[in-house]
Structures are given as C-alpha cells and as structure tokens.
Length: 430
Image (cartoon, rainbow, N blue to C red):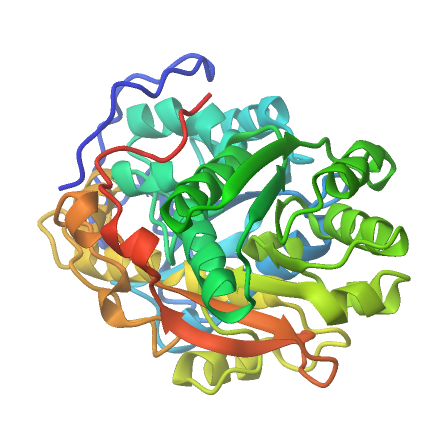
C-alpha cells in the first residue's frame, strides 16, 4: 500500500467524525445504504431496479483557466458512467455523476466550500480538478473515507491512497519532455521553465530542473500568474534568457500568449508544454503559426483520435461534438481506476461502501484501461519508487488531427525519469 506522508499539512475545514457505513444492496428497508448510496434508483435511471451510487464532481466550469477543458472533462465522465449503467451497473447499482456537479472556479477555497456542501451526499469524487484545489480537501476526504479521481497529474498523488491517479505525473512528464527535446530537437544550452506559482506549476518545474541537471543544461525558472493579460513578464523572460527550450506549465491561453508574444519579437526555439497547456482552439488565434513551428505537448496518453478500444468506446459514447478536445479524452480515462475499485468493493463483505472502496483502490495492482494506457500503468500495491508509472507520449501540432495534435513519440520514458529516486513528491506541497 502506498505510504502516507506527514508532510501534507493543510487547513481544509473541520474534519468529519468517522462514518459508520452499512452499504450493501438489499440490506433491509432503509432507503440509505451509506453516504452517497441509496436503495432508490438514480434520477433518470437506466436500470430502474438498481439502487443509486452518487459521485461528486468539483471542476473549473466558468472563470478559471481550464474552463475550456473542464466542460468536456465533465461531459466525458457523464458519458462514461452512462455506458457503465447501460452495461448493467455495478453490484446492483447505477452510477450518477450528474446530480452533484460544482464549479470551484479553480479556487482552492471555493473548492473546499463545494466539497463541504456535497460531502455527506456522495460516495466518492469522480472528479476533483486542480492540484492545490484537491489539497484543500484532502484531509477531509481522508476523514470521510472518500476516494477521488484527480483532474490533475501531481506527483503527490502517487503517495496518497485517497487519490486515484492515471498517467505519468507532471514531474515525470516534464523530465520526459526535456529528455525528448534534447534527443530530437537539438537542445543543448538552456531551458526556461515558465509556470503557474502553484502545485501544478511547481511539480512540473521540479521535473524540468532535474532533467536539465541530468542533461547538463542551464536552468531558469519563472513564475507567471493566470490570465492572458498577465504574461508581459513571461514574454520578457523568454527574450532575456533566449532559451533553446521553453517548458510551459500554464493554461492554454497563457501558453499561446507567451509563445506568440515571444515569437513576434524574434525568439525561435522549441516549446514543450505540460499536458493541460493545449487546446485545439489555439489554432484559430494569432499564435497559431508560432505554435505550429515550435510547440510540442508532453501528455499522459494518446489524443482523441488514437486507435485503441477505449478511445473508440469513448468516441461512440460521447457522440458527435462540434469541437473535439482532449478534455474529453482525459475525463474518460480518469474514471477507469474508480470503476475497477467499485467492482472490487462490490465483491467484498458489506458490498460497496466508502470504506470498502478505499480498501479496494489501495489493493489494485492493475487497471483495464481498454488500451488507452497499459494495464500496468496503475499499481497501488507497492512503494511509488517501484510502481509509479513513468511513461509519457509527445504530441506535435497537426492541423488535420481532431484535437490539433498527433503523436510524434509514443509511450516512452527518458533516462532522467527512468533513473529518478522517487521516494517523495517532486515538489514541496503547499
């Protein structure tokens, strides 16, 4: 089982008292079978004879930098669980991730508030978007025996039983992105990491620094705020430092503003962005020519158009969308470990309860991702240094691809990530 870390210290609201859970299907006349579980069918139930499991989703749906991705993430997760219900549900229950959806605006305090509002009504969180945002509720999740699917890839999650992470974390992703650029783009001298001043940005920047050191590159790190209008300093840093490689960990709008602004002033180089920096809508902006020439995306799996069984099922379940983006892809992939944990909990004494789901998740040594990731990409049964997934893909801008990127380097791990001694998260969490 993954070890818990005492270094995580946050004030995330009053901890709940331990809950006594009795959730098993058909357990008497009670309509409540435990927090987030009812013997009554779900609203708009697919299987009217099934009870209902409610999952929560706390996302960034309106004001935050990831709203263009968060909407598709949430819609994909609704489609995922609808497909599960159409296949019969789990252990006599349908799954509902529609009722308890909240907007945190990418704000940790609001994220915490939204969790407090739903914490007694959901079995688990099918989505908790953001690293700092999830940290703001993590201690309460532990008190409540609630697991959560992160809409983030922070290295901290590999050390937390409560968080069901899929894909390589930001830190390994950054190491792989730098190693790939050194090998394939002729990067030799300097790498500049521009990133948000939070756990998302810090985790990736730590990986960039480690890879820079391993490759003998000069390393410079610059923090930048959210918002397109706040990037003048970041653009100035690129022009001052003149890096061979620019590694960016922001939202898509900020990334395009930085790259387009620097290119307009004559900078040329290679840009690698953390996975959440891309949105195909950027190809309709003034930055498009610079992105086509210089931008690559480090990513945890293949984009929307990839040829795997899971991708095909996702596209069929979601149906026609006007503008595919890989928020849909991420939202879908992230649910597989929770599905596996619910199935395993259904076979335990007492059936599906919060406590059993936590236990089942911590005992998963593989997950069937239907080809979107290798089964061994999820393993919670050993120490992170032994079992954490370290492979990424690299995507390049492709105007003809459904989401504007196509794979130029399939799953691989560079020498920096492969040799990294992973005994604690890459970044000191706040």
